[in-house]
Image 1 (tube, rainbow, N blue to C red):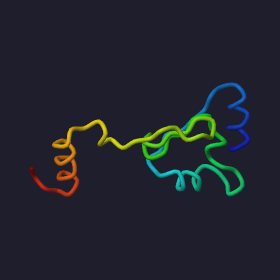
Image 2: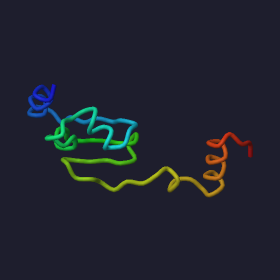
Image 3: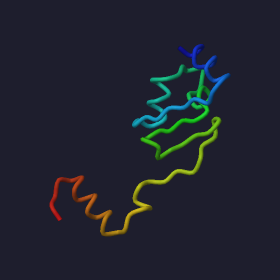
Length: 84
């Protein structure tokens, strides 16, 4: 599979998006000798919260930066099963 990805990458940019953190994606997609961010042109861990381009980490941030403080409180309450 890694050989196929390498050949494909010679013709087009390739990437992946996954819900796991980068360590888990390393286990799933690469080997101990090969770093997962070096296999792909673009890598998005944690559903895109952490991004890599050509092996270099891009800036990342959580969703709370885009929400008002009330919205964050509601979100955390919902996450804990409480009603607001």
